[in-house]
Image 1 (cartoon, rainbow, N blue to C red):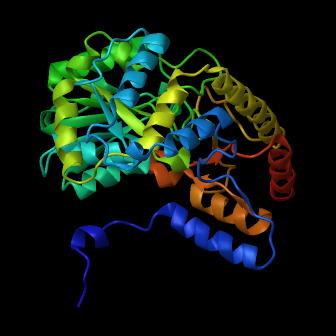
Image 2: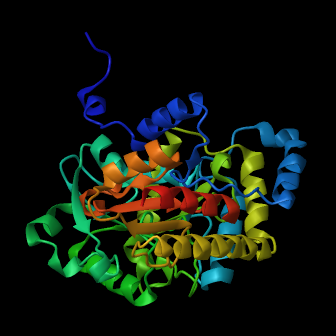
Length: 385
């Protein structure tokens, strides 16, 4: 006799759970494990944001339920941020919804717009939540390969007609996790035109919006007519090192946001008000701290890419995010490379195959350690490679 549904039984083990199990075993043996797997910033939340949280915790009114859509202060801060950063106008009442982290919003979006059996177009490789959310909503995932040869962009014109007719949602994600690629506004204009032509709503995951090493990352909301067909998910996790705070937002199409608010009002009561108000403060404050964080990641990225290159690996420097995506050495699969590096070097890297079949042959590392620690990783890899 079992107590879980077949839907849950069909979900494969979460790759990071398996990695954490092996990591714990090595630590028990006294191994100094360096984890470059999960993208959880090692940098601190800026002190002014923490101070604002403490201040808001002193107001007993903030211990009450939040508005289901999130407090107006936070939604207005998101609107102001988009105007300042992207020159995009958003209505805080109808075009912005507060989320308990963007991951939660992305998962709840699929049943908002997709009926059971319909298709969700998912980049391959990509963040695993897109595919799992489709599975939990009894929808079908259709992989859109994003290859290095095509600059990690899906070839929308090659999607089969029968799939386009059955598709009810398409995910995009730039700066990309795991490939660290970026696109320009021209790509978003083409994607919006494609979505309109085929009546396929678009969800753009913009979690790494501030972490770019060359040109600033464009918002999909800057594309012509984007709000007619698309929504964009944002997070404070990476920009302000607030992963555990669980605060994010979705902006864009009014109908989609209203539908998502129906699901959320029946499943949660938004985020703790002091967290929302501290997050509003973060969006409104001087953003120089964000720029400083990017420079730290740039220094780490340059050092790590140079180190991998000296080991003979063909590495393309990332355009954005704080990941490095690189082909594994000849003779390895993604999985065997990750296993050997963990066993022999005590270093956790994520096999590219964990992000989809098109990720086979690659590995992803997170730049969430100091330059000195990353150099130690290179020194350990040298003994194996």
